[in-house]
Length: 323
Image 1 (cartoon, rainbow, N blue to C red):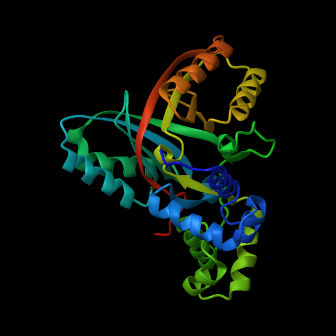
Image 2: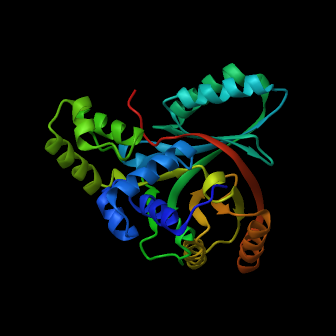
């Protein structure tokens, strides 16, 4: 884990809250010059603390559903596994790829407009790498909540901490220019209007206007940080939780609990084979075990089982990309 001072953590926190905010705004909050902020950002990028800046896109509004695929690998060499991962990262339908330790070896997030399309995507992957796949679980995503990394500034969860995407599938049609703008923002959420204008052949003012429309429609929900958690915090766990007898009241209590814990950065509602995923960033195994013990004690009446996975490395995180 990299050594970060209070100013560093505040800057990273602000980028996690809104990765597109001007450097001058961050400088004012951190009581530093704009040049100092720019210098520190370059340092974070060169050190690998920041992987990229993400644009959170509500893909169901574009007609897509999300799925997580959990894979247990076997009889695979390091070279073959690297090739498998590279293949997933190049796939348009794959939004997130990570390797992990625990019951599964590899996780990837897939998007598809229907089950036939999903089946086609998975058949193509398994057709090429079937001999390395011992088993896999396909988990439909109902909705997801992103939480700001309040632990960076030692704060309790704020009322603004929750960004929700997913839910009912829609079909909002975007013209080619908007698709190209969305693609550019998903490649780098801090891309300037001038940079994007060169790609889409529009004026910077037109680009800014279209971005505002995408935000207003809810297609763009947020701009956030994609850090290397090992360098930012320490250890990244994904916990798969099986629930039973969950009332609407208990569901709200569960969401409020996750919202209030600064180390829980994602809460994902799923259909099967488990019903909840929590992404947790901590400094140590001891901190994680304490958090899980408290969680289990609080929700012993509805939690039937849980599986912790230690995320070893993330390779891709991109909500949308133009074919």
